[in-house]
Image (cartoon, rainbow, N blue to C red):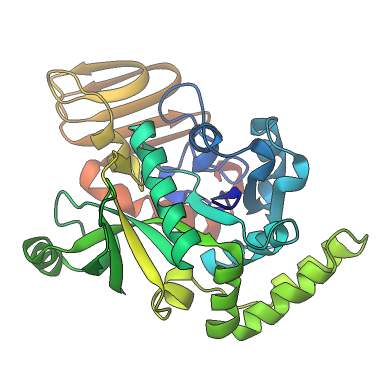
Length: 359
């Protein structure tokens, strides 16, 4: 197999994890579980089968300080800074242009930086199975998570022909990518079978992916080539800033995966959680006999099914059910678990009131 590269996308703002997630230190840099941040856990996971010099990270300029603090194990030249966020297709295309300079036929694995993944050995086997397809079939491969309930917060991938053969992990041609469904549609997907959650994990030969960008997003491809042509020059930073700001913001799903024909799926049966909100953290955390969970000093009195995070000091919750309490510095969040998705509205309100000290 060709040399393996990893791209970790770490440019998100993590607004649903306010107040812990702030502009200077978004969600991916937080230690939600254990001592390592989500980003550091992701790097460790890939480091078991990818050399450090082949791991790239794309992030935003505003996160440069915390990114470099948390990644002493990686070459600084592998840290790529977008001038502005432009969704996943430009991000992946930019990193692919960097890696192509070294090895156009290398296999690149693309991963979010902020997912909770367990069963690391099975994860490794799954990624390597996807890499084998990418290498041998010149395919673009996604890792699909076997759904356990009719989730409405994930996109789905419908599979077609089973190409598993003698392999240990199920493998398929892909029929189509579908947007996040409503509950009745998601229930029908599970009943019908052959549908997987879209994990955001992709594997491809660098040359094959860039050919797809050229075919389905030619303007972006031309702009990325202009950026690549200036790599290593003193003017590179200005070139990147000028061109990248003007490219279209588009997801890799919409820009490539929904159009290309050489798309495959490898079944992911490792434990996976995209940790999209504090509710996701609560569901993933260990709980006491009353269904309470959290981190830091806390007291639960006559309280059930709740989550507390305390940076310092004690948080006491009395006589409540299904609440989330997060205390961090000069900010405290209290909300019903069912309203965890609405935390983004707090960010909007703080911005509109120019209360940037809390962001």
